[in-house]
Image 1 (tube, rainbow, N blue to C red):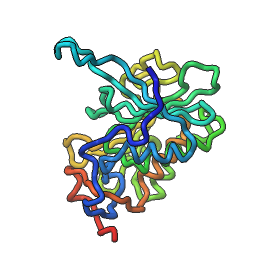
Image 2: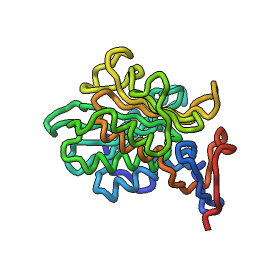
Image 3: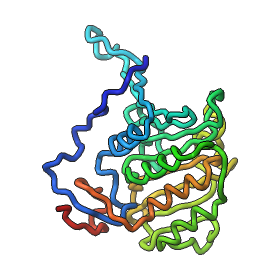
Image 4: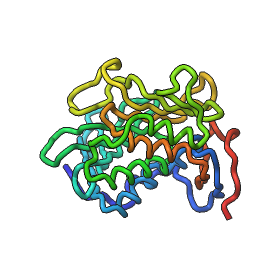
Length: 270
């Protein structure tokens, strides 16, 4: 069934509270999502006029034996005013993994409202800084034609190198990393299950090239976050993501990722 979204759904008992001290921290690509990734993204979308719905699947009957109960799944769908783009909060619905991390937001766009399929999709796991996802969505919202490419891949690398990131020695036209070599941006083969042009089509790894980004706090350590853009995602939108990700401006945090606490600069927010 579908129902209007309650303004504070989904609640997160682990979310930071106002009693926790707040800090301005950087670099933002290591700052995590403050355990507020849903609210950080959903609130600006509401201000932009995106409608939201909950989609619930399954049922739970209190009188059924526990082993017979169906598991209740839910996603939260935000739809742009022109209905050409949508952002889906899929974390409660056991999304598939990206970089061994669960995907939290999936963003898609189509060329016209009469089309039932998305032209491209982008995926963001937990601990992607919420500000970066917001900047990507604000750029998408400003687009009258969200599927038409307006620039080439060089734009993406240009914005990060302007912020001090380094081009990869072996792939200077396709990859870059931050100066500490912890966060990476690469244009190449997309991971399995990334949807492009037709959501019913599973793209094979070697079929198409798209942008991938991830943060690996230490060599061989688990990723802090990952993001993937299907091959048809316009490069200027990926550039908006990349510019925000590599920005030197600090972000406000109450909860810091355990894996990057020692790598963050912080100042009390007074």
